Length: 478
Image 1 (cartoon, rainbow, N blue to C red):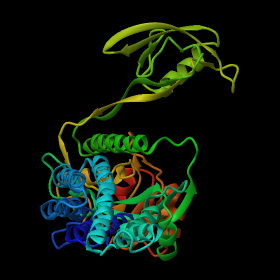
Image 2: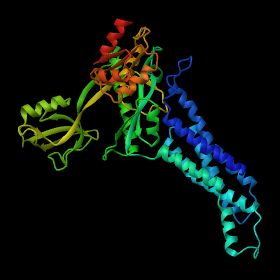
Image 3: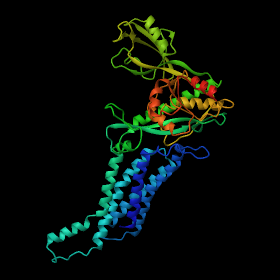
Image 4: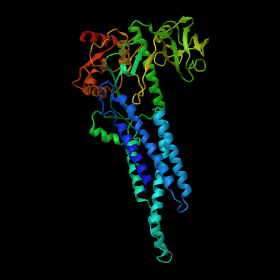
């Protein structure tokens, strides 16, 4: 086989190995260095090794262009093919090394280069076989037999075998199955993830991640070999993967902001979180609010009565307005104050309750007086479940002497505006991931205590309702 093909095969083998590593990326955790760097941080550096895949293809293509000789009229075709591989290879390596956050674009580039690599391997092998063979002359053999031998020479056996093996592996590692899989993840020290302006070096406060993604055939094999893999059917109405990814990233951003505001209030800095009106999220079609209100409107007053939260709005509507009556709604729209007359109708659940036909949420005003620097990790896409431990870490940094008192802390749960700790998914997998570490305590939302213990029976699990419960336990046991 030509030397360029060796580089192609190296890149293909490395690409498949990277896919397997990505799906089993949690296994080396909780390894960490003496300086405290955790496995999730090491992944960012190891990610650079992925550049070897497109670079090996680019090098093989350039080597082939240099070695190529004019034969059988395929010179120009092969040169153009290899030029395309080289260009895509360099672009792919640049994505890995300089813009690793552009992961989807990287996958597109590698996906475009792979068929060209196989085309070059197959065509080059066929040309080599034909060039090296001693073909029978006209008349030495019957024409049918001569054509058969020539056809056999053009069949690239080694390249075809490599293509077949690669296809089988890619199907096992990438083909969607209609199920989702959840399995254990890794810990992330929140004091290394976020640092507040003026804050001190904090103690060990670990959040924990789980992996939740579309399942591939190989996951059923992993589930037989590894613990706590769980599968569920993907609902037919689930949004596309790109949309789900964007939602998860947004939830992480929101969780960071809420955690920062709550933490600074607990540390005596800032006012925390206050209600600042009612935001319209969605409008029911053909409802009284349709064509009158818009998604994004922030309702300030009803008939001149101030409403700062959903509770205020619900109480006013129930006590003052009757179904069918019109309400003067004062709202903020595009930075301007607007008053709109909106009719009401009776709720289907309660004929005495007036409704507009809208979905709403309380608009929160977050006071975050100090800036916070967040690190970005390849394996930490997002989600709100780290909110409680991030809040604790920021309080730890802003409190003289810290709040962990030397305890190795781990925990999970969302953080709400009032400091309460909300429910999360994957608690069994998270408990198992923490059980592999040296954590002294694992804080979990109170309602999930029993389920957490089923994932790690020997772990010191402490159920909590609020961030104050966490602070109180640490103060008592420090």
